[in-house]
Amino acid sequence: MTSVARPATVILLAACLLPGGGCVRRVVEITSEPSGALVWMNDREVGATPCEVEIIHYGEYDLRVVRDGWEPVSTGRSADPPVWDLPGPDLIAELLPVEIESRTTWHVVLQPEDRDPDAVMARAIEMRDRLSAIEATDPDPTGRDTAAGLRADIEEADGATPDPEAVGEPVRS
Image (cartoon, rainbow, N blue to C red; front, side, top):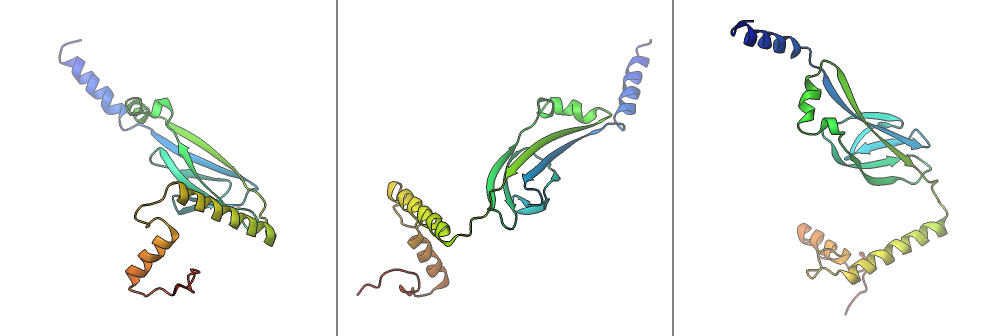
């Protein structure tokens, strides 16, 4: 081959391959037990289980799964890239004339909802005690991260005068 023909052949070959380039499809498959639960990813409703969601970026996602009669699940889940979709190899994967799919599967097991008033009250007391323990071990010196601090922030923003009886605080004389 002549010295002019070689670069022309490479350019012609590249021009033929580029338009035929495939794509990488990134999919998160979400299932639940029982199925038929509504799913939100990052506060956006994406469907009912089982469902597939195409994502643009890998990383952490907030996942919420809800179904009537079952306890809702709110959790963080991760979609990690396969080796071939990391920066560098992903350029080759994008240029190949085939469609490549990266699939991440998340499965959520829901627990039956317990509507027994005594059980609901016990969970509320347990949560209150946990919050009190957190506030006692890691108090916010400004007082703004406590329930009373939050209430004060809201009243300050509204320009309202607090009514101690309405917010459940003892009346001080």
